[in-house]
Image (cartoon, rainbow, N blue to C red; front, side, top):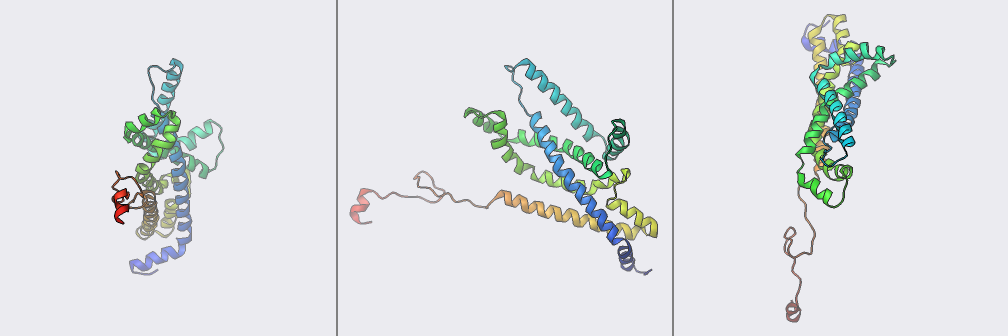
Length: 265
């Protein structure tokens, strides 16, 4: 075994590098699936939470909407207020056997991370929708749009761009927090790291490799998401081509009058 630190790191990586890379792939896979599914859940819950309830609505409709919102609020508060490690243990070792649900460890990990992310995204989406000026909704309603049409074509396209940084944050957090799923036996990066460190009794060197792997994954994802945000922003400057004399965005456009024609201008 080499005596210098870098040599010992390379020695650990040469023995367990493939195993740790496989664990990193599992971590990234779980994070991607959990973030995408969590965003879908969060958007659905956030949209329902912002459905307006007017006094003139049918009492049955208002009652059903109140019950649905109450259930969704309980879901959001529960999963935001409890640690994901406890949720994983409760669901995999308690709830699934109780309901006689047979699921693989990987599918259970997808489910746990998705519903956890969905709870956080629900509040993010709700805040993003409420941040859009009310005049947008009023304008859509004034031309006969329903609430669903207003959400799909007016509010959500504007809110999505504002939510992109938070979606990126959730992905990065999920890459790191996927390590807690090792408590139910998910063979992700930290699970592989513990096995390597225990076999070689070289914690410092092994966890150094793990930290570098986590940093590479999170940094690469953050850069890619930043590029996606810029793509959504479009060009920095927009030039409107117009023939309206009252529009100055493209410079003044002057229609030739009869006098100019006579003067040969």
